[in-house]
Length: 197
Image (spheres, rainbow, N blue to C red):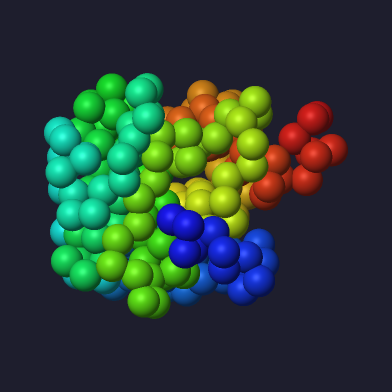
């Protein structure tokens, strides 16, 4: 991750990240996703559109070149670009299925935005859905988070669903998203005064 963290000078703007996620969604064949149905089939998109194998892995440290982790740290997901694989922490996936979807979207974000010259990208627990008490994630991690949110919760569909029924729990279920991811996405997509009414 250090090599990526030093690439802040070529950071993507929020608008560019949104546009890249929209481009990916626009290229999904209609037989795979009609552009309307929820939730967005992120694993099918990774597989069919990018040829990436998604694997649920019990021991994430078994990945080639996996970093040494401190006590209490865990890898949520990783992209092995040279192998065309996304690894997802199987224990987290069982406990929090929406996090699994976000992790796949996050790693797909690394594939779309950052894979040039990289053989593996590792994401520690907490980088996927940072808490307010943690420092800001490195730029590439923030970009991959934004990409995942835009892919899983497209602005157009968020606006439609919010206008239909703004119930927070319903939105989480419809998009198969965690409350944390949905909260951040709502604040990014829905104008503040509308969300407060």
